[in-house]
Length: 270
Length: 296
Image (spheres, each protein chain N blue to C red):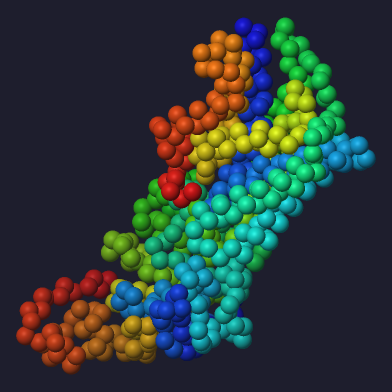
């Protein structure tokens, strides 16, 4: 599975030739690591994954500049299926399981991107070991699973293609805290088995806990990056994404000064 | 009573043939979201090739050539025309297929002229009597062949990797491509299969009791449109049920036309469309359709 680093350099993406969604974004996902990308809605997180996976054309988007490479192979302009074959597989936001197909058929669909039948069979065993509930529900329609189970299925489906880099787009979105924690454990487990992970999350506490490095995207550019443990300790991150710290003495809330600032609830910190 | 049984068997047989056409129509719609109005021309082209070749290379080889020709023609429509049409709205592509249909139908009608071509089938006008009920051999052949093809298709659709890819792509194209499924190949396969099915249907639309392939054959093929639509455009089950419903309606209404003279003559040809209208009034998405019809 050693395939080298997934390296994004100065990536710029525009939608419909008009809306610039990413400006000069650079980041690395070294083999076997977990890298996190944080950011609010609309910061460009999903755009980054679409650019890597080659699905921008579905959204009338295009890469204007920059490069995405896996090892020494460029992924820009490749068909999504070729990117999958290169070993980079995405779990899309909102799970997007095939609701009218059975659980087992969803896994088969994932295996269509596998390098060979024997690899797919091995991956199948690994996935069912990771998510025993998928074996129990094999014949059920995927649309009838709970949100957490659908997320497991979406991850399992992606693993069927034997990726060397797994792209996860907000895997804990809309899940109960307990289920989010289970998904987090699974992500850790998948990483321990040797798959590098690029994790997109709004749940900053969880993402920083799982990752070794993190990047913060703001309006399409990397605002901050560094080792996750450092970022977790920085005031900026604590204030903006972890919801702790004082509201009064921050440097950029000039226009908010004097307004009533509602108390922020602390995010769940697992 | 024996008339009734005869009519039912003929109706089911015709229905199976309509189902073949409707099935092709439905898989093209599922794979590409295009309503293919050129389907009748694909059918006519397949039938024409079979009719022209059967004298020289024998019936089975000619039929195979006809199937291949219609499949290739379907692929060409997708590759040369639809793939390049950079439009957002699938309704525009449906209009494009009307244009393709006009071009193909005009050329084929020119070649056929006023002739009525035989497809050289081995059954001719033989009739089998079972317990006092006379059934044309061609009708039995149509029923058996169509049922076998439909069964094989449905099994493949359900159990093979191709079927899984096809259904995944139909449900969510973007996610399917994230799984390594090539949507362009899925659409090509859909057009090829639909063309092949149409060519087989062409054979059974033109054998006894129909005199043969003529320029009106594509009108007969048009009756599969209500079959696909009343079943639900995106449902393979719907295509089968719709096909049978249309076949039976047509056969029974035509058979009992004498008792229905208050509706005027020729009601048999209109009945399939009446059934479609009634079904759509009750279920706008068709009997088994899931998506809203605004998609069309």
